[in-house]
Length: 357
Ligand code: ADP
Ligand code: MG
Image (cartoon, rainbow, N blue to C red):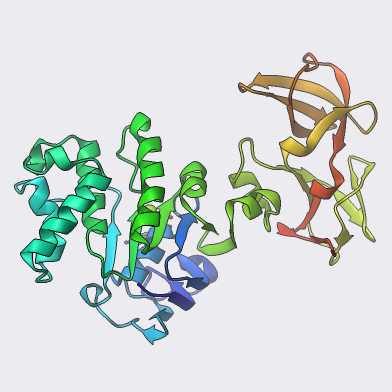
């Protein structure tokens, strides 16, 4: 196990990259602490697999360095990096039994047979595949194949990091939640550094202590699930996390005074900077129906189980509110109130309000 540092990483798949847009990874500086449970979260195409493949050595970065415990491994081949990588689709040997598949990474490194047996049984038990150990892998369902593939990633106890690249893609929805919590439990038992890559916020937030959110080849925020929910540093994080995501509303700002559709809005604290494109950010959970406040008209009400989402229009701007209890009918004229300590200002996408304790 080791701490992993990525320094000034940039990567382009083009032979002669010119502008920023030619880079799949723009500028990555990151520290992964030893033993941490991390998720790398972002939409398809944002560079997650590129980053993983650079850490494992399958890909050589155009610029920058990778350090394991401060030792430069940028030029080391994958087999000398002591990394286990689990891919989106199962990588197993169909002609071998489940047992031999799990044993393979250990036998390959000359681990003694008794220790191989102990470790294979331990991992099989954690993944609940013990009764399949004698089965030929070709006879397994896709779900079970992927479980074995994950087991192969977890079986060595000498790896620096175990990386999962969207491992639940092929898993049946009803099994997904089960494996998801299983992985969290496995991290606690195995204690290796784990990096879990996904485009699914639920997977990221249930697995990780720290979530790294990526957009378009860049890291936009690193934080705990709570930090990402409560103080998105960028409107992208606000949108991407939460269901429904944060309301991001076109607004105006002049000398620290903020308004929406001509009506004054109190924001959480001091407004920093000047100019740029101004947006207000507030989560639907912190918008409420009130007697006074922003005038709005109900456009749609959706019942999402324990509460309703009321979508209301303020001029041309749609605002969502999570409401418990009674909801107004479609077309009703209402007032909306924003909880001030949860009302943030964004300038050109980045958080521009500051609260001093
Ligand atoms: P993610 O895993 O987040 O979906 P990727 O790292 O696979 O994203 O891709 C990041 C960007 O790099 C995308 O624009 C993708 O099209 C491009 N890309 C990925 N792999 C290659 C490749 N082998 N050759 C050229 N472009 C690639
Ligand atoms: Mg990918």
